[in-house]
Image (cartoon, rainbow, N blue to C red; front, side, top):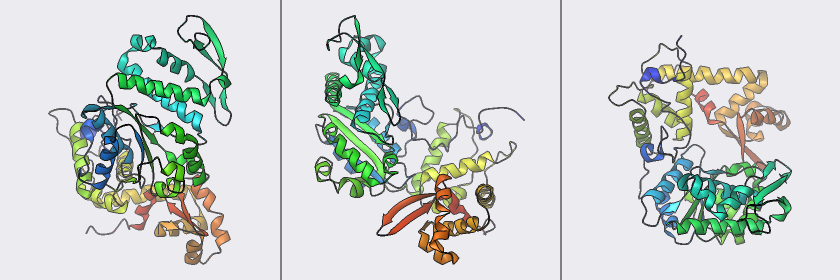
Length: 434
């Protein structure tokens, strides 16, 4: 067996055409948002709303929400690169989105904004010009603070200069407590002003992974927005928060002070159309094949359509399933995988994963959860003829194993959803191709 790090070479590709990472703003990436993005209908409500939000001068705040796997991060990345490269009044962005972390507060938020934006400027300006700027030197010193989870900021910061001068050659040590959040906000204002002086109309901050702040309940995310409300009103800064379905109504709407500063309508992103998913595949095949070389589609398009229907158009799950299928094929297999073989392969992969983890009655109950897709203790108890207490004891294991997630609470009912990858178990692997 030849040892190669490119699983996709046998199909004629330089990289994985089914990679599920968000398309990168970096033009040198194998799949950059400039080259690989399949534009949604520009007249759609989602595109129009985000465009109009970014057209508002002076900054703003907006939520982009939708089901997991529909392409929210890539959608925002596409619009960010448009406004940086093609707009008359350009908006600068950090190269990557900012990932919110559990237990974040105002200080963590400010430090992440400062570090991500100054890192972008370091790349654009070059090291020599960057080091000459007093504001950027201050930010570099401050964002070198060591962070320990659960204990805030520890240690001290070495800053050039004394007495707040920052321009002198001597060094002094400043205790972390001496740097207030107000001073961090002042540095953010100075940084935005510097960017505007460089010819940009403002800055776009793209915040992701907000669901991490809801693990202990929606109140955590509400508290976060209350705490950072003043930071969000920074003139010239556009904040785009990417969140789960219904986040605006659940988190922002109940907070009058926070809602008053947000773009009143969230951007709701639907899954890509069937035709758009096909276009995504074709575009990636062409981009990842060497010029002038032929390529082989790893799966017949019937497989893509089948997975599209199974996963309700969520492209991330479609791509993950195809990658899983290909990784289980022998090295000598270099032809498009047909629908019947794909069904049988996915069924074997997913059922094997379950049987290695769950046994006996727990496995039977989970298969009923898969049939229901979205379930409660009561719905499983009724279907299986068990008590709710018997069902409840399985839930911690399913959640810890990432087999299911808590979806929402409605009244007294706690709703859960199985991970979409298990939905292929609802299809018989021997089912005739329609």
